[in-house]
Image (cartoon, rainbow, N blue to C red; front, side, top):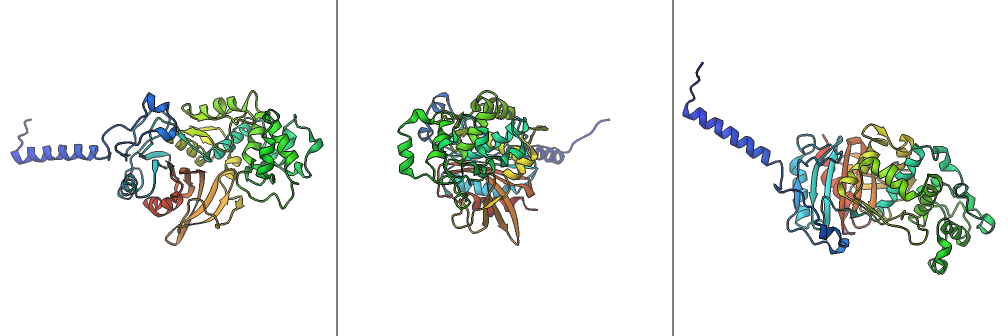
Amino acid sequence: MTTNFKPMDLLAVMLLVFLSSFTAAGTKENSTPAPEATAAEAGLSFRDIPYLDKSFIDVAPGYRKDALVVGELGVDGGNKGMIVELAREIANGDHGKFDSMLIAHKGKLLFESYYLRGRINLPHPQASATKAYTGLALGRAIQLGYLTMADLDRPLVSFLKELNPKNFVKGAERITLNHALTMRGGLLISEDKWKKVEENPDALKGQGLVQALLEQSGPITLESQRFEYGNFNPDLVMQVIEAVVPGTAEDFIKNEFLNKLGITNYAWSTNPNSGLPQAGSRASMTSRDMVKLGTLAMNKGKWNGEQLLPEAFISKAIDRLVDTSDEEFHYGGKDTFNQGYGYFWWSADMRHGDKSYFSSSAQGGYGQQIILLKELDLQVVFTGHDNDTNYLQIVAERILPAFVQ
């Protein structure tokens, strides 16, 4: 059978093909590949990384064989126009010094963007977000049977067999892993006294760090065990990891935790006092690997169907176990309230209209954020180098509305 096309029919077909091609090409704001650090840039300190000539905005992230499932913004969820508008404002510098913004929804990475010092293959300094990763590493030790959930309420010193309790301050046995994970260890050491302790660095190696802390602190009391951010609590948790796992904490974090997620391009500095991995800061991760860590938490400790961390541990980690008050709200604004803390994860409610949504976040100074909104199955990752930006408020005001149906 022969079909005869009229000129107008042929023109319509050609126009349809053109529009289809235009639509496919239009899924990316940027037709170039995501920016990658050169070998020379990878060897620089973060502060020396040159700014990108042009920001990269992608509403259909590419598959990179990194186990992340990818999708397309606006097709697999979210309001494309709202998010792209925000990304363009970030690119223009309207919201501070961002290095990346990534958004995952219902298990798919739907949006990926890089600015200034952001590179898809360059581990970004994480600052205090490292604390959240230390907590997750402890959860991995529980999953593998080196600890139990009940152990979280045992005296922390019971795991550290090299300590000599003879000169411990009163109440040292009150500190549990649960206290340390929620920043309520209760150690009271003045800055001047600690500087004096550091004059003998050899005495602080290994468990010597904890020995010094428990000898030099004021008494550990119900009153002293109030929420106080930092205060050596992450170091106490890392000491327990080192004590209970086979080999070293460094090898355990690498082989039994990060490698299980396919995270191999990272850095994690060593504490100059104890010789253990830094527990409270100084890890570096790529933005995509931050999405993996957030996905692990979002999926109740599962990764690719394997239970890497106990569901009960993750439930506590990203919950509001401690109310920290809104007096000093980290990166919040008019639509964020009820700030709290779990196991090294912050929490806050986000207001949209007459409804509020509970959020959990790993937070690092100057913009390192993994923000989870479980009710929406929504994850937002930021990296940056600006401590004056209200990252949580941006999520509440600009990103959350784009995913509310």
